[in-house]
Image (cartoon, rainbow, N blue to C red; front, side):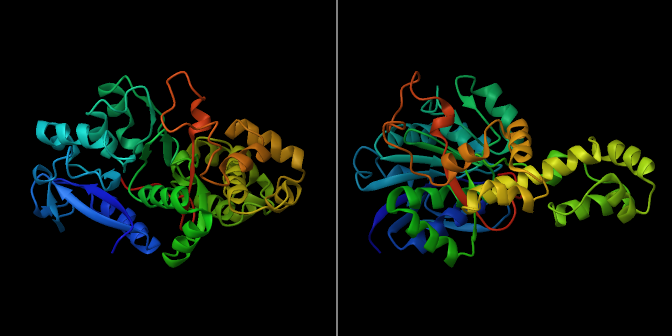
Length: 356
């Protein structure tokens, strides 16, 4: 096939989508050659039971001799990662190999295996939200941030749960070949929306509780379906079939926040996606999403995101950052972590990823 070579590392109990998703992105780009390696060549059982053929056994790929033409190393995650971390041969191979390739990435809980090498010490990393406590507890030298869908720190890239691996792979394509190449892949794979690397792993249904009754469910659904519509307590009460006072109490009890706070959060999430996807003026966006004025949007956005809409758009519209802000291997006292954040793509709304 030819092109830049990408080596995927898998093991018994890996999550198959951690491999298949990024593999398809690189394949669609048409400028990469991928190989799959495991402790033993041949069928490797994934966590879901689907066997995947590994082209190479790690012991047959001497990292000191055979990795000179490997550009990128990608470590898959999955329930089997804990057993994989206890394999000294695998960890030792990764330690040497990661030092001989240009770029190293992990998908989902693959960050745990990569962390076992010590190469992530002092670096900002992410993983699936369900593995955050474990990663912090077992690798205290890491700067763990499990809100972003993926993070770049120098030549090391880490991503959140399974589908975030595709966002990460698209960002790698963009980093290598530019925005147009990444967009072409996104179109082919119907990954038609673009989300920034700082996009939270948590969708609206995850950062709040779930409605327990039909009236509150009706109110929540109406807000999610059209964030920019009128959603006063009177409007929501009419859709739920309850009085305004009764809905206020029920909604707050079931959702953990009052209706007005919930509406604002949904609108801010919609604004984040819109700012990353197109160049719609902030004033127009504010009116469309129900904020009324640009100043109201700015205040709400800053309250939830900690940045102005214009700054957010400028930072996360592309994965390439100026080289003076992102050296290949920034020192620990180098640019702030927020300056080392990159962006990606996603099909549909920002859904939470499956644990991997």
